[in-house]
View (cartoon, rainbow, N blue to C red):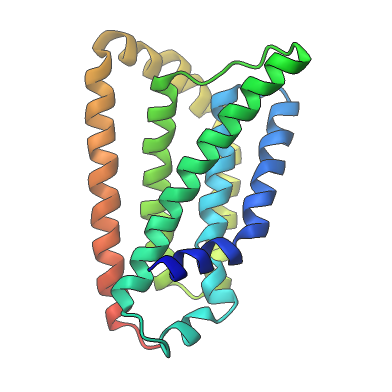
Length: 204
């Protein structure tokens, strides 16, 4: 399992590096820090799930002594590791930049980190099974369409978040986070189980 996770991280090294570029560009364009993290995690997860198919790695893996359950599980665990690492590294980088260069980039609160983590889990719950259902070239097109739609609706979504979501958070406090987090974790685990069943039945 450890070797499978290392394989995922190695194949996605350029995707991980480009995620830092995405974060820097969105931050430089004056987006709120939360949205910068959102765009970065969306890009990372969407590209992280496509490399196996493009590089025909699944053909090699099925010739090695790994079960299909292990192959799928390594990808889900790899996504969790990347999400966690990205949030920690970028949050630390913002803190250091503010400290050394007297900048005023807003740092993420614990609530914001929890919300971003929940959204990232939902993104992964969608993109990982898609990468096993749809051929890679079409999956990338679907990711492109999803990204385009995200770009179109992002301004209304920001207004909705600022006008309604923040009010709900103020009214219900941590209960809303517990409920949202629980739903995100449940959907992520269901997606994990669903993808294992898909891959077990898939001809490679």
